[in-house]
Image 1: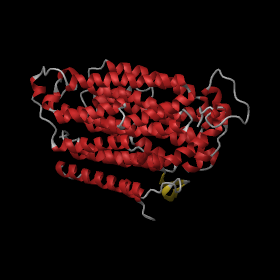
Image 2 (image 1 turned 180 degrees about the horizontal axis):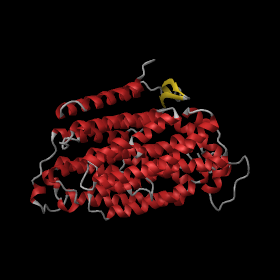
Image 3 (image 1 turned 60 degrees about the vertical axis):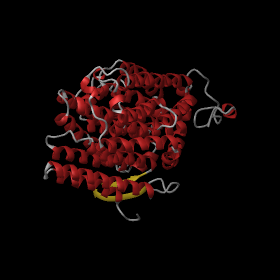
Image 4 (image 1 turned 90 degrees about the vertical axis):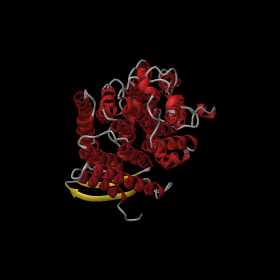
Length: 519
């Protein structure tokens, strides 16, 4: 792979295919989109196979100066690698899930292929302005997917999605301009090691937080998400929950934590407070939903709150757990939306009460649905367990109170997910049309089977996903250690501050470390 611009090729393949889809008939557009996404998946596998674990932090680097300090700069670390793999893994499944789309098929496929280019660009960009272009441009194809091919209330949902996410990003752009003026560079790896003035970090953190909190989405700026999910076509919901929400978490990992560590420590309790509220409130809201998509959408907010709590635990377990939760949620939430889409295509309703007893006439579907339900709940042996266990272990080191509140999300998650599954798969078959629905087709097997395999793989052998990220998470943890003196008062409110020179990077005293309470 030496000298081969694989990242640029991965950006170019779906972009060119998307342009071609605009000029061919519907059937050819579907085939072209599927082939292009599969090619990108193969390139992603090559990227993973050639990634040198234990080698340089930034690999497959491409840099071409363009104009006025702006450069075409791409490169990945282990964290970006895993998120790119998630993106290229889900895209062919999205194309397969779009069989029900019958109007303007070429434009629809072009929008998805453009989305793939922009998602990969977000995770691969090493120039600040290039990242911003990819990050913001990703709004456009999703806005069109919801607004053109969505449900009856699609215009309202698409405008709400666009305005919410755009507003926060304007503040982020202003902060970026100041950062470039201060540091004299747009290079992201350089900025990650730059020591911005502590006083300026507060405002910079809040500007970036405005964008990433909406994208996650964090409570209370999450209200666009249920509307967007309900109105989006099935594949739109899959890519929105599977990848786009992860851009907020990636932003925290790539920008907020390493670039503004003191400010991150300063706002720990704000992040934790909003996350704890999200875990409890959105889980209770999910419990009373009648629409399957809305239930899963609210569960996404609760799961992503576990990510933010883990990221701001300021220790290795919390960071690793947050990353695994993001990867797991990307797979599981995507699969749950696909499960909803399978039966919606047959009965054209998402009302939970219209179903029941599907395990009788759709046993294969019920089996897949059960696996993804258990993964969402966090059953050992599935991907959900690994991430939540690591996150809660990291959170507990920082605050037992926050860990206890966060753990209620697992209990409430089991309540609403098992309640959903019981009403859909078991019970009496009260509606003849639901009882007559056929089981999974070959196309639907090809959609759900790979995700099921990935969920079990991550649950049984998570090391294959953690190994590429471990060195990068360790480097981030070391970077955050500089914030321990400032962060200690926030992480351990009400406790005396340890004497100078007697605290490790998690903010614990040496005596606590001797008792095994610090890593």
